[in-house]
Length: 122
Image (tube, rainbow, N blue to C red; front, side, top):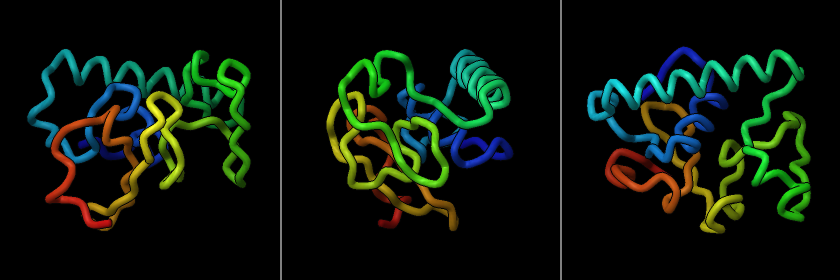
């Protein structure tokens, strides 16, 4: 759906917008595109300011929920990127991983419902 902004940002912005990663771009309204772009710009701006990629909203941070913080070489708090099999921070469903056109996809089937199955290989 989105290219050129980096897999982490795209994956996380799609989650934050509640959009399935397999949704064809032509099915998103102009208003939806503007909202998605505004969120991408905000996420990238914040990443430059703090020197890491944090995409989780305050209500879902470890301090707010009591969960353990993310620990890996990338750092940063994210919703679904590189978290397959883990519980979604919002709904608790299992984060999924698949591939589409050679790219990794990560998503929550509950928070990002829609066109997922046929085009994605596990």
